Length: 186
Image 1 (cartoon, rainbow, N blue to C red):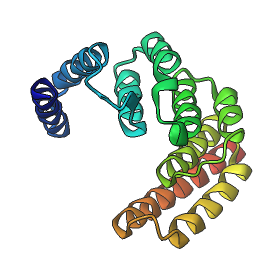
Image 2: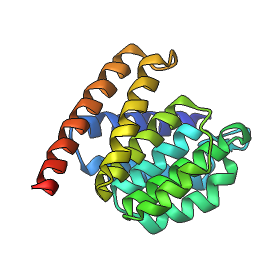
Image 3: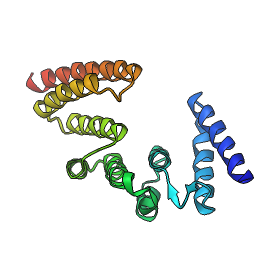
Image 4: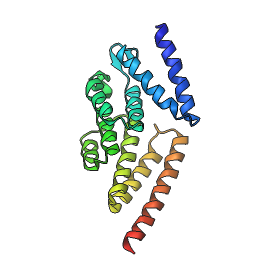
């Protein structure tokens, strides 16, 4: 328990440093995660939280450790609690596919799952929007932006500060896409 607390403090320290722009702490945090996984310090009653699972995948992708992330998803996905497992696996596989530029696989992965968790649902929509931008599928993109905007506004589980952030991001993506459409048409 004492070691678990020490690693938790070190993890928090690394995250704070990363948030301050200290990039070398990403690799240190990655090593801390690996150590905690090896010695099962991140598990509660044999389960890895969906949040930790997502954070580890995101960090591995940021560090471009694609093969490691793929193995991690395969090796530890079954350790995510059963109620969050399907969302966690689908979303994190989709983020891996996106990082690799495998956009069709992203769409397929996200289509086959109903996201019961609002965090994953928000993330999945953002990921799909990025896919449509990358593929230049602007008709579908504008439609998704409209429905996503309505979802964010109406969903009571989305905090008001996040609603503002998403609204700003959606506005930016819409403007960016309109410029791209004008360039393609010209």
